[in-house]
Length: 412
View 1: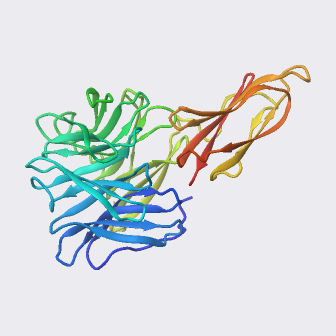
View 2 (view 1 turned 180 degrees about the vertical axis):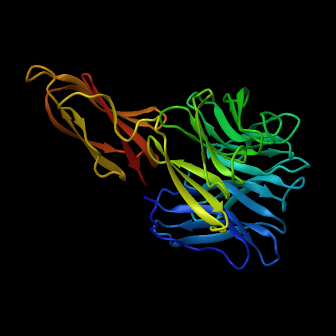
View 3 (view 1 turned 135 degrees about the horizontal axis):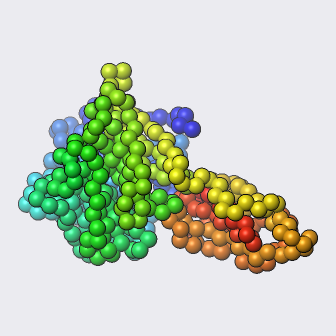
């Protein structure tokens, strides 16, 4: 409900900023960003917390110039890989880096990529083969997409854009094994800067690109998969609003075509969105900030609902006497019990072909728990998710003409 469970402060006398945070397998979290040093330059800042917000480790890394972490992703071996920008070890003004640490925060390797110009890294996400999708800005000009293996070795790189400025902020895999990333463009679109959405195949070849925005500045920040298909793009806008900036949220289908848009924010201040997470089949939570004459700089959390999407319970066919209950426990780790009732479809002892299946949030089938004819009655099935990653899953019951779906949250 957004009520505070705990808060913590981190850092020293200078400027300390967290730019990204992910949940860890032990239900804690790891946050990365920058911290000031006594010599007045910035280092990579890494803090690991347990589930209660207590510090597990706090470390900084860097050289004699600016080194800033922007995004972090989990590695398959339990470590973590970050990207950002470094001036301490660079071929030019600033280079994109990949930096791997183990689960205890100890450095494993540090690699840089760039030109003689400015090439910061902005986003990193895991790929299906254990490698990573990395995004940034190429030579202070184009949106940059890199595909690397688990050791940070380059598999391929691609740049996208026109004659002006572009940047790529986050890329993720798509159900057809391609890549989609969001960012900003001043070469295309209708304004000074437009939110930018680009889809590629698995080798980084351009399939299509779309822009979103008005006549002002519209900057793309993050993209997440919609559990019901398509994508949610998080952006900020100053086009045709009363304030300085507002949140700009765009829902698209799989082809990047707009389904709906929403602008959120005050009429006289500056509201900027930085991160978004999907927390149910139709709910998203947005992290951002607000600044006006009353709130002189505050962190904000905003919960939104997609009214066009199904809610937690998805009843495709309502049939009397049939029911899929909430799993218990839920959230769970690593197992939960799923209970359901099969009703009477006709004669007293009629059996229905019944399936109970688990899917991930993009619709991939994970496992089949039940696949048999079942008569009227109450049933229980245990679902063991020991081999699965933390996240949101969907449980779908189908019996005769009855179909119902509920969400499951696995937290390791």
